[in-house]
Image (cartoon, rainbow, N blue to C red; front, side):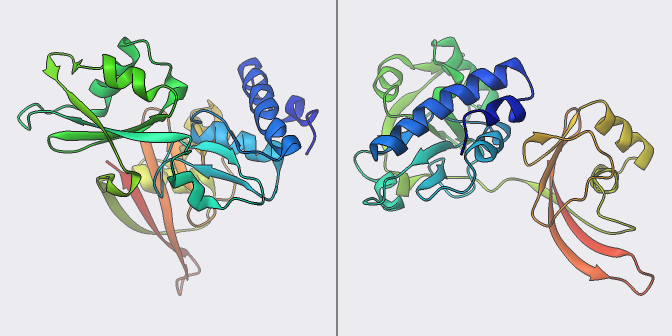
Length: 261
């Protein structure tokens, strides 16, 4: 664990500023042996942070529910376990926005309403939209302001209240399952299969900086992809390599890919 690693890990000037801020926050908690947490991080920001700190006892990611996309990096001293993240001193809370079911609000509608109210993006985690309600995660500090000031999304009135994390309603993401056989588990092959495009076209997306693996940009078409990895391509969408099922009689690799729709 070395602060000088920031220069090596950061890919942009913005990364340097963010990682320095994260380092100061988490390192202070480690030094004082107290709980410390960041704001919500994107998958890419979280991966960069993990590279920075490496394997440290007590360091975990928390987004309010299992499988959350936007998560906080949290340091818990040895006298606390992860159950403390669900208690009264949790660094985040879940708010439920209720609305008439005939108003088909989207993730973009709710996020736009929050940004329009002056809420900083890093204080907002995942937004889980359902029929007639939306559960979304925010930092504990910003929750009272949102409860008082967020009254509508566009022309749709909202009724807000805080709910327990155990009561969160997370809709299952819609996916299309793709079963295929590949010559290899290269990134360009996975993208070609998942999005049904030519491998040469997939390589162009990668070389132009539009592809990412688990949130981290990758410009190498021959990068090997592991089972469980999430691959996103700007302009095409996101997929997950759900399983690698061994070789066929012809020596090709059998895979199952979930493409988010």
